[in-house]
Length: 81
Image (tube, rainbow, N blue to C red; front, top):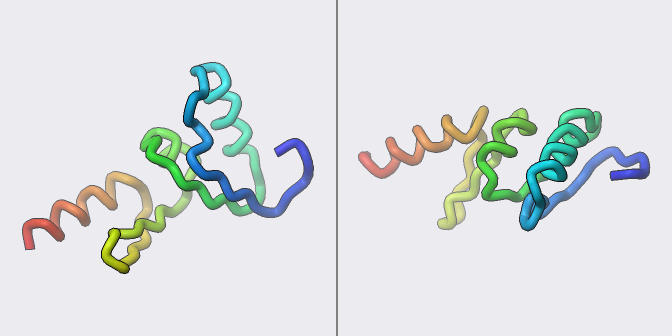
């Protein structure tokens, strides 16, 4: 992230980070002007830095959502119906 880039691919970037380092990472990602592909279980980071959530359902399906909570609602409806 210290050199110019047009896109970043990050896989679980928050694992083992302390709070101050996590805050620096979040701010850096918010300032990044390129495309970001982020694989994470960190729901807060996901909602804070993403403009779209591409969710894989584990069964070959995929969905595009505005944020994590929209995905949760879709999962809830899917399980009911």
